[in-house]
Length: 443
Image 1 (cartoon, helix red, strand yellow):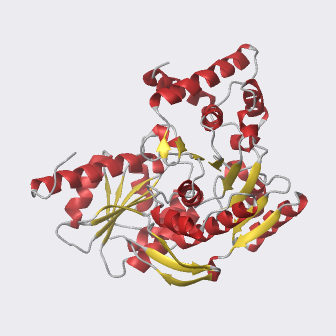
Image 2: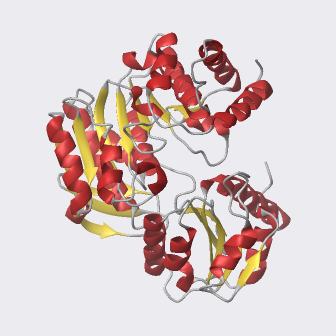
């Protein structure tokens, strides 16, 4: 199997859809000799912030000298980003090697008339094989959807179960109340592991607390209200939290303080579990953490930001950050959404701040909301809307609208599925522009 064949196989697996439940995943892992049982995990669930917390925790652990695997989904720029060790993505040959092993097991299951594993189940099994083969000390694992019935929850050796903010999302699968959604996510808690949760709504907190009690797991609450001396900024932010004074992070957005606090509580718990981190390494790791597509500054003139706000809670957080950082500045939106998301609520939470809104169609053809349909929904709230035929065109329109206004801000948000292409377009355009002015050369 070469890399082109590997990508074709992954694409072919999409026919099996998304199936909640662990029976198929357990069978697949058993045929691979259960590689996950020989690894140690930090398992992260939540509606928003999972990726950022994963980035903080895994970066600090790597800086501290632990060989750290990270498994994420979805990715922003490249498929292989799903599988990383110490921030480096899996090689093409490595992916092919592990995928061949999983494919053989999956096809054997199908030949025996068992359900064929889904793409996500196959990818998760690839991750387990890769991290074990490379002898990772610890793996930071992000759930795909929910928790209890998510393919990642086949693991049993969890050191810390971590919960970022829990809000309404994927209601058709996880439930139509905060309690039901929190219960689905709380399924990642294992017997006597550490549990770290962002401060939730009372309903969600009650569910997580009860699940921890049943599993005899020690619960720690990461309460962002305990963060003191907070200094916000687009290129750097600082805060103190309990014993940690003047922690520096470079990721922007007001909400990143909460994610960083969750990460600090998680790292403290890992210290209790036998994975201590010296304070100087912790500080360095927190400051070095980067995460693409999360209030990510990708261009400077005008200021161009990419953010994966695609649901109600994330759009509220985005709106709060825009109001905080960019009072009395012109703001232009680029929006691309999936049709199974509550895009009307995302529009309602954000439209007031936009001077103009450009809509695009994400590349996921089966789930993508066409830019024209999104524009029709936007026009219920906002009069100034343009449908772009491509991401490239959306970027060019945004630059034209910004003109020479150095204070203008362009914010592209919604589905992560189109942000990778958008980031490439903006950064390539910026490189060409700098080159034309004689200040740099394109690589």
